[in-house]
Image (cartoon, rainbow, N blue to C red; front, side):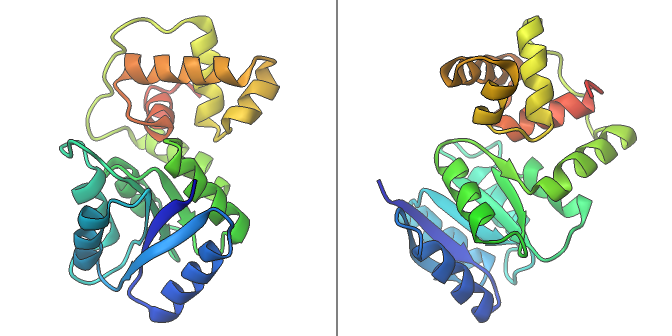
Length: 216
């Protein structure tokens, strides 16, 4: 199945480059481009792509505002958004994830990681550039979340605590399965259980909860 993507960046040369990289993948198609956040939101609501790839800094609405409009907590039928930026700034990353982004990449991430992030978002998963994951979440764990993290609706099992730790370290499902010597389907079951118990919408929010509660 082809993954349909909208690319939004205010720099035409960047949009063109991202579009060329994605269209070169056998199962990804860029169906629209936008030069500002407001246009990106309009296109996304009309076309309902599988994934939106948004730059942080855009006129009209920035990438964080556009992400919140399409994937925020108040959105009944959220779209998958991956945020991409030149700026390796922790507050950008955290704001994007809080707004509902399912991925965060730097523009120097490379074609392979970009493709992985699009595939992960399309499948309901999430991917953050490894270069920022641990540093970002650790930093915010030290300073503390703006709102105290909610207690799980049910106590986590020992295995769920193990899964929680691996997710917080940025491991993929396959890597978790290999590390813990369990099947991929078992990993998915545990992650679904974690999401239900923590009220998390994706693995990024699971990771954020782990750091906010100082699990790592």
